[in-house]
Structure formats: C-alpha cells, structure tokens
Amino acid sequence: MAEEFYILDGVRRAAAAREAGKRMIWVLYHQAGKKSRMRRVYLHSLYSPKSEIKTNARFFRIQPPIERPIDVEVLGLEGQSPVVPLLEVELV
Image 1 (spheres, helix red, strand yellow):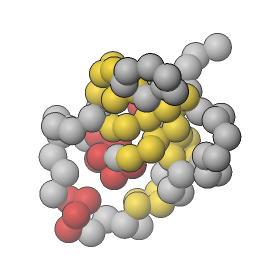
Image 2 (cartoon, one colour; image 1 turned 30 degrees about the vertical axis):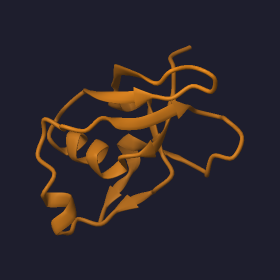
Image 3 (cartoon, one colour; image 1 turned 180 degrees about the vertical axis):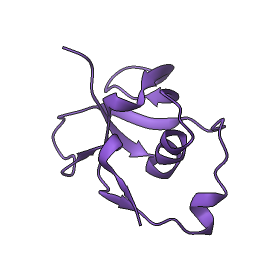
C-alpha cells in the first residue's frame, strides 16, 4: 500500500503546486522519536484537514517552485482532524 500523509502545515502551498500542474512536492516528514527529514512525495498521497482554500491575494502570491517544504506526518495518527484528499480540496 502506498504511503499517505497528513498535511500539518502548507495546504495552500500544496494546492498551489497542484494548480501549477506539479505531480510531486518537497515535504518535511515528521515522525515521533525521529529527526524530521526532507523527501519528495506525490501530491495524490497528501490529505488535507481543509476541504477548501480561499483564492485570495495570499494564495496567488504562492509561485511554484515552492520554496518552503510542506510539513507532513503519516496519515491516521491520533489527534488528526478529518481529512480530504489534496486533489479534492476546492478553491473558492
């Protein structure tokens, strides 16, 4: 089974990468008891606690390539909010 990730920080940046046609993005992968590490993941493996993103000036200032990585952890850990696949996050 493919890995799935919960977005801790960076839903707007991930959505901007999606809208720019990117398939992969750099993330900072956090694991309990381990040092966080950079890695590339497919956008379809990301899950968002936000079901929609406002397309305001803040969103449009994000220009790929995304400079700052998205913070993620493995999906399904205790305490995570309900999620939607990043590919289904709506721009409003």
